Image (tube, rainbow, N blue to C red):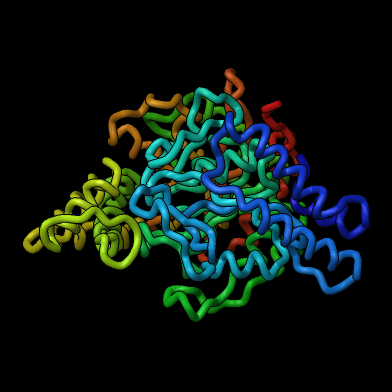
Length: 481
Ligand code: GLN
């Protein structure tokens, strides 16, 4: 399994051909994806056409994009012009967008070869990809287990060698958690760093576009190619985008790492606790200083998120009414048609969120729930601001458990608790990354989460890269056949 930077280097030297590599990936998807279930749609013809164009640029020594010829998969939440985009939902089963999301347009401009669209929890609500309306996705490390979610297809595709890199979205952990479960790198940049234009919205104040890769250089490449101001997204950050690859100095000398007490308490799998502590020791050996910090509002994160996210979702999902696009189930009048359409088109988890959110926003409850949650959100942000007065990055586990079995978390609350360590960085919009940091006794991957200051992705990547270079984990791959 080659990384994106290995592939593009080989293309530039003439040691590999973008068309042959695209064909290899398509053949692997054809042979193995029946096992994994990572893809909802494979865009074979478009991929080969893009690969041929990339190949011609390499041959002609024409100007190259930073991802020229790199085979990439996209979560089915990004609008792709002329290619079905479902967001994992029956209600968008036959939706074909007339435009590309900014992320898709930027990837195409960077020369990427888009292999297809990956499976996900319906409207990105979930932590296991089991809430997809279409199919189950299996973890390449153990096919009886979930790949995590909601970007499970994107994580499984990278882990299983069915794409060289991918993009997902992270609203409460949906890229970091599947990255941890699948033994790959997943990074949620600062809120607004990558445009949300053309992303099918879940919770707009929390939605982040986020890459998944085999290593940190690839994360730096994907982030660099897609970050930056976009006038089409009102919350897009207008700040310069540094050269993230150049930031990978290999050194963490003098870096101050904070270890929040609240992330190592009850509910944390002891094997993860141990692996993450060993990883932090490794950062210390490499020259970082390590100190304990406290983020006292951590315990309110999940409760707060599960007010804010459903509230925003209930509002965002009001547009699926059978009128403008997507599924329509006829009824005796307008109200009947809308209610039949939504009853048939949405799955159980989406309905639960819409109901929770509608309740939280209703007259008389708005201030008690949504208003209160937004105030707690401010307190969570203050906790981080205080910690970042003393340290440069925070090191924590990404998840409290390793990948669980399909069907194991039938209780919605048990599923929600899986997000306990990823939600705070979502609520605050801070950049955070999950990097592989070992395996449990059963051979399942474990993720180390690093959280950084606003817009300081470069420091996060530098720390993650130094750690990666000093450890063997990122080089280990599952064998799928
Ligand atoms: N698991 C969380 C949820 O269900 C996060 C999902 C996400 O980040 N998209 O809301």
